[in-house]
Image (cartoon, rainbow, N blue to C red; front, side, top):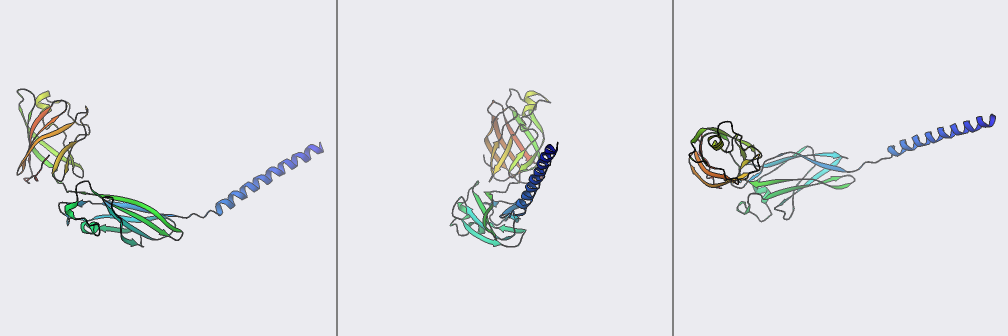
Amino acid sequence: MNRIKVILFLFLGAGLFLTSCTKEEDENYFAKLDPRGAVAVISDVSGFFDITNPDAQNISFTLSTKGETVNSIEVFKSVRGGEEFSIGTFSSFPAEVVVSFSEVLGGTGLSADDMNPGDQATFRTVVNAASGSYPGQSVSFDFSCSSDLAGMMDVTTVGWCDGSPVFTGTAELVETGAGTYVAADMSFGAYEVCYGPGSALPEGTLEIQDICNKLSYIGVSQWGEVYQFNSMTVDGSTLTFDWENDYGEAGKTTLTRQDGRDWPNLTF
């Protein structure tokens, strides 16, 4: 009996010892952790480079930091994937970075006339902290054109069906993003006169995109149909275009702006 008690005492003592050691090691391990490193955080990204009006606006973004104390963040620019140039070093955060059209092209050998829709300028950050330098976030901005086509329209459409009556009504072009627009009925009344009132409408992801006054359809209808323009004319506040889809549906639509503004010199 005494031997059993001794063995049990030793076993319990060993368990307490192991538990105590494990706890002490864990505490010591975490106490000795020495986190290092820092990152640049880019937020409040705004603007694009307007190739039709280089003096119109600037791009901007905000720099902040996470991690250990940051001494400075250096920002580098590159245009169309070309050579990098430093645009400045920032040491107080948050910091707003503002760059004009002429500033982004400075030193690159490029001019506004060299830029095309879809070209990009990229800004890369390098974080300088006490423990070293670290790569930070990057952000890119498009070279494009401003677009202002949204508004209420008077609509006239002739559909593809034989003996189709002319649809007359109204539609609103709603801007869904930079240079992209949608109307509730992307057939502009052609479905109503050819399929009858209450017919299903194209919907889906179908939109009209404006890139530097060149219009195109993007996305597809809810049935997967692809749309295209076949002709387009502008006469002041009136825009007339022929459209069709790959199912064989088509129409000739005239949109007259209710705000009286002239359409830009649109093409397709």
